[in-house]
Image 1 (tube, one colour):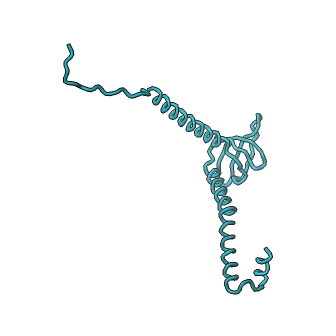
Image 2 (cartoon, rainbow, N blue to C red):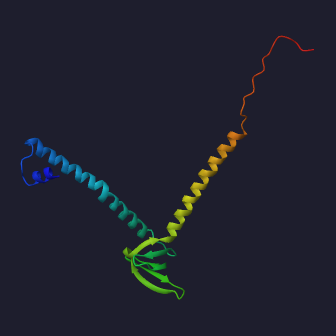
Image 3 (cartoon, helix red, strand yellow):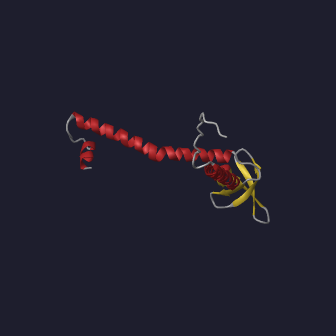
Length: 148
């Protein structure tokens, strides 16, 4: 670590090879930081934007403040939701939507159905293998002898 600090401060490492290794090290660190921090964050932001853009009337949402409600009206930059038993209406900005529970529930059902279908397929393969004869019958050999 002190070697890297001395290189950064302008000290001489091992000559020209030391400065080249320092540049390579910095490029590698920037690459790792991109794949570990920046790329996943951009992916999450894109998913959130798609979720907010796909809001529909009747969807149940949760805001970033924890308010749960059902979407009543959708405009370009804001939405109106109903909350509670007395159906209080609130106007919110789209960016304030944290989770679309309706889409999340649908996704969970689809995943569960896919798992069940895979399990059924696996069970049907097992039952087919069990139904097949375990020992193959030996083929009959034809002979020239006649039976009386």
